[in-house]
Length: 320
Length: 94
Image 1 (tube, helix red, strand yellow):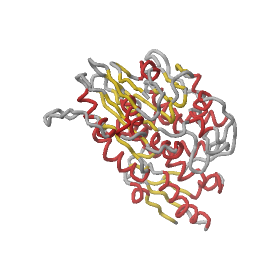
Image 2 (cartoon, rainbow over the protein chains, first blue to last red; image 1 turned 135 degrees about the vertical axis):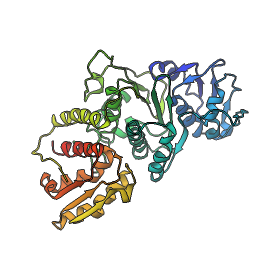
Image 3 (cartoon, rainbow over the protein chains, first blue to last red; image 1 turned 90 degrees about the vertical axis):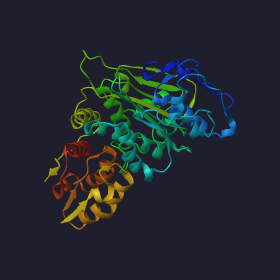
Image 4 (cartoon, chains in turn purple, brown; image 1 turned 90 degrees about the horizontal axis):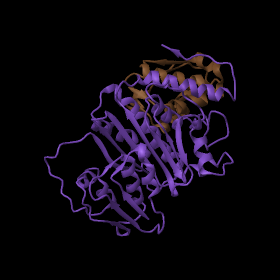
């Protein structure tokens, strides 16, 4: 396999990076990087790390990096995670950034503690923490429940001061969405599978509307919707298919849809095959809706979508 | 009446679905089966996830029907927790 870390790869322009991934010779990983400057989304790092973690250090060849940003890769723990010597020394007086370095999570029992300990590294205001914790929890739990990823979940996040945005990447090298959705739905393509996975109330664990006792089929829909309401990017890439939610213009009203293909998006079914699932999401911190209001907007669409399939008498919860 | 303290099990971020399932199976369901009322106390819980609340409640509503909500009270819920509980209670009844 060959993966090249480019000069620039953010969710908006990530397609060339994904297309450049060479999946041949899966027992070897060659990592190269732009020689001048590296400016990349955390999901790119998480992807590189996940490829390396599927192999032994002796199967990884990383070219001598020359870009000034190689220190960034070191600080984000890419080389530590892969067990390779970067020959880079971090100076002790370097300023602390607001980021969660590459982290491999293999034990679901430790996830709550991880989130509690790591999210403060982003130095967010209390009201900004809620969506971040929510996103990290839901996406990582998805990996444990569905992916069968031998390396667990690889996570990375960073706050960007200039744009006031948090960018999050969570990646696994598991069975991919098509296999999990196909347990309950007759899907033929990765595209169909991802479309279903993003639809509220649909989960591969059951055909029953609204899910099982343990799984509602709502997680990915909620996360995509958080990105949509905040007018941010969201991508999901599994098998040969990549779906990208595009930003809603500030001048346009935000509309949530149960069918992800009704959102403003781009997609492609001709990407290099990814064994597993990649999720990248941006969350801008400018004028974000109160999280509880945001969730209410999302739930209205969720309920409407599920209601189209089934209706029952309902009562309201009692709060004391 | 059975009082269930969520914070004691989860800390201030209630997101562990396995814990939610355990609370449902070991505390909520048995109490409801014996016609008891249940108070689920979220004091100290700053936030939760839809997945946690779904694992905590969905099967309760499925098994006992919507009427069971007359025997369950949610206590000390902040706006976020209240919002997510309402989401799950709503969609489990459609």
